[in-house]
Length: 265
Image (cartoon, helix red, strand yellow):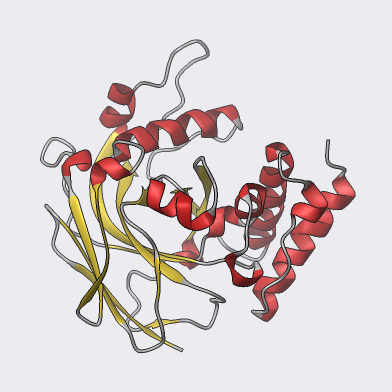
């Protein structure tokens, strides 16, 4: 078991990197490479610090759901993090990069929940249960980021770093899961008109709804179930790619109107 002093030191290292915008060394020297409980404890420490500063939880994100992103990150399983209200830049134009260190963009499907996903003990969280809990699906662009220098991360590093979260943009062109089957969508992401990433819904754990089911199981297991009104970023449909100030990113996900965002320093 990782000691509390090591967890606190990892929280402090990542928080300082965020505050100074100077990437830090990995935290696996403090929490190891196998202790997921410690990695999520570091994540909780960072999130609680943000909440103490006035931020509010608005949902969750699922990371490393596609084989392409797992290959990019050098990991072999998904993880999850928290979405806070100050990460939502959907209404900003252009989006400031002042809080970002080493950002990348990816296109994905988001869900808004109509009800809690917290069945009684002994009741399985099934695909049908999570499908019924979805109010609407939306197109999304996630701006992922890493506080760890050069993205040289292991699995416990990215978990600790709130699943390498940064900012997010969510469209308003919603569809119910009866109107659109998430696993069947296609995604093309362009930067300044050039396609830089592409993928399909079934690249996301076979189905973005399956990714949501996986998250619901983990959230309940960790004692913080998914709640009505939460926004869920279900995971990238293709590789994430870097961008620069002045770039215009457009994610075109079939069944939705194109979603675009422009960045400035």
